Length: 239
Image 1 (cartoon, rainbow, N blue to C red):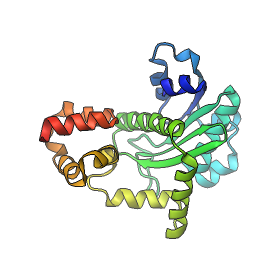
Image 2: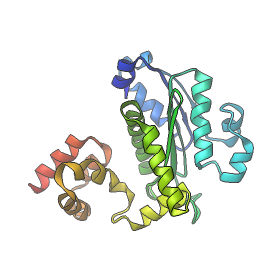
Image 3: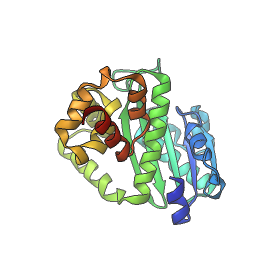
Image 4: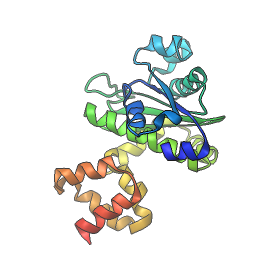
């Protein structure tokens, strides 16, 4: 993220709820991050979302703090407040409590914005609090990388068109997808970054055997999303 921001001469800020500042922490671990990172708002309480970031109170009451309208307003709010080109916002249910059938533990909404471009997406990770925070952090940073390198306007339109065609909202579509994924979403990154390189059958084999892999390899797969890391693991373990 930092290299892309530097190259494009852009600045960034974060608005974090369930991640509690972890995204800002990851960004500032890099030497020289002060050239592009300007600040963060840890809006854990709804009052902070409303008073500091300008999130509409009615939207929180109607849709909940963990929702697309709220997280998008958080992103726009911190972008405006800190006066940056780009921003990342996250709101979710880290767990272990607080989940509902409609929004289970592990539900996280992520929004990224650069200039006028805005993209948001919902994920459902799992029941482990620490894992959910880490996955939300990694997913948010990955979303910003994609925002800086791809045309997210077209991606957003395709998602909205698919939801309209299905007659469902974004939360419903995501939950349906999660319920049909085997195993569930903790390994979706392997599909996304591996299928195009190795073919679906090889990646499915890796996923099926995931639980039998040593813990250090499992966490290596979870913690690093780059294609070359997935390729390295597939090569070493199965080829």
